[in-house]
Amino acid sequence: MNVGRIGILSMVAAFGPSSAQAQTARASGASPLAIGETFTVDSRVLGETRRINVYAPALYIASGELRVPVLYMPDGGIGEDFLHVAGLMQVLVGNGGMRPFLLVGIENTARRRDLTGPTENAQDRTIAPVVGGSAAFRQFLRAELMPVISERYRTTGEAAIVGESLAGLFVVETFFLEPELFDTYIAFDPSLWWNDAELVARAIERMGGVARTIYLANSNEPVIAGHTQRLASMFAERAPSSIRWHYEPMPEESHATIYHPAALRAFRLMFKPDSAVERGMMPGPRTFNPNTLEVIRRAEAKTHSFDGNRNARLERLDSLQRLSLPGSGCAVYAMARPRFLLDGVPEARRTIRVNLSRANEEQISEGWGRSDAVV
Image 1 (tube, rainbow, N blue to C red):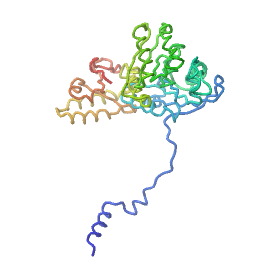
Image 2: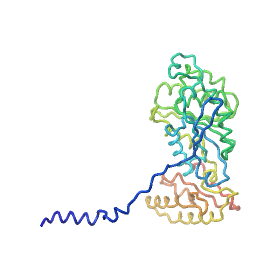
Image 3: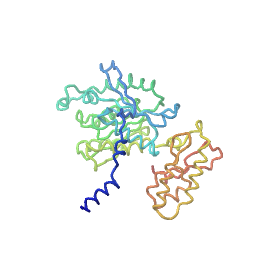
Image 4: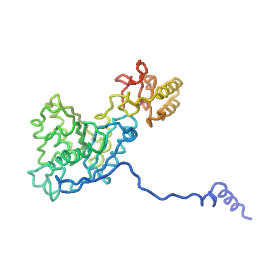
């Protein structure tokens, strides 16, 4: 008798799936995974059909009434940058790091044609059969795509654009040549070397007085970093008060890696919520849920039970973050004693305190001081 073999068979019988269990574990048929919508626009301006991908935040979908600003992005195809930017926006809107935006991705057909302006540099013209089509692409956005988005979706009048590399070049060019088209311009590693850095050379004369915001970031790519830093210096020296600007050097990133980490920083800063309502975690006065106050009070009561143990505090914090608003589908981050929580707990700095001191309970608002507002 082989005792070792019997032992092994006993272990298989004890821990392995039975034949009956194996037979009942059946997978369903696969179906497409949808994270948004896609449609095409037959463009007369460009003389071609363009595919548009749209991601809407959960609050927008659930509300039926909520209007949101729009973030347009070149390089917006499924095989380009659309998926990772949509995922980043989902996380940031969900944790209160940015306001809800509709993301509109424009899939490329001839990227180097659409995203470059005219050039006098012969070397530039060798990168593609046709270059210098940025004016037509801008007209497509203004005259064809933006009206379609306004008609199909519930949007506000606010619009922003984000792009990297040649798309960043297009963002900066549009900032200078048609500044009223967008409210916020975000460019990562913009290819400002194009046309012998003409955009940088003429930046000061084109700054004008149109109120707008621009965010610039560059990687460790030396040519791009040099031009971007020079442009940022011009903003520092000569930008009028109507222009808000921010420059973020990121030497730890390469040209291939900068987009996602730069977008995280830019969205947090440029689209930072101004209130708990804009964070998407609280219903506004018109959609006030009578159950909200009870949920908040329960959360407040839990904060009083924190003990001095750091891990226990973080565990309780996590349980609070998962608290939901009945009937709203929203997460509430309700902290009644933010300074107590923040003391010695860096991970807790993303929490939001709800101020319950207002007489009108519908006007629930943010109640922390500036030193605590790190999101």
